Amino acid sequence: MRVPVGARLRGTFADPVLRSLTIATLISTVGRGVALTLVVLYLSLIARLPAEQVALVFAVGSGVGVAASYFGGHLADTISARALLVGGVVLAGLALASYAFVTEFWAAIVAEALISIALGTNGSVRSAIIARAFDPESRVTNRAVLRTVTNIGISVGTGVGAIALALGTPRRIA
Image (cartoon, rainbow, N blue to C red; front, side):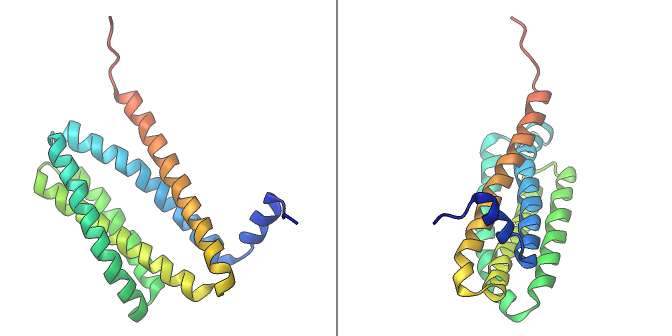
């Protein structure tokens, strides 16, 4: 017998750890979605970096993020996962704010690398928290919930960023 969706959602979010992780994930991913869109606009239109350099900024950031996720998992096993998560959020916020001062390619690389270190570490730390907080029977479901929330958050965030793009795009008059 299938359990109704509403009952499953209530049951899922009854767990305070999952509820906290879900809220943190939603806030983080909506912010990341907005940031991805707006940073591309900023680097292209304000910092006047060519498209190739903007792409390279995000490619380098992705590579750094993969490496950081490995080290983040290791650190989560040796240091407080909660402290690492808070530190990662603070680092990501400061690094994102630093984009306001980016005018050159190298500075964009540094800012994106710092953001990627924070986000890569945070992903591994969240996984460590899930592994410790939930029993094996609920782990897969809880990871699925967080993955779904991640996808929704990025989608909503990029949608909000797209609104900014649409509002900032001059209309051509024929």
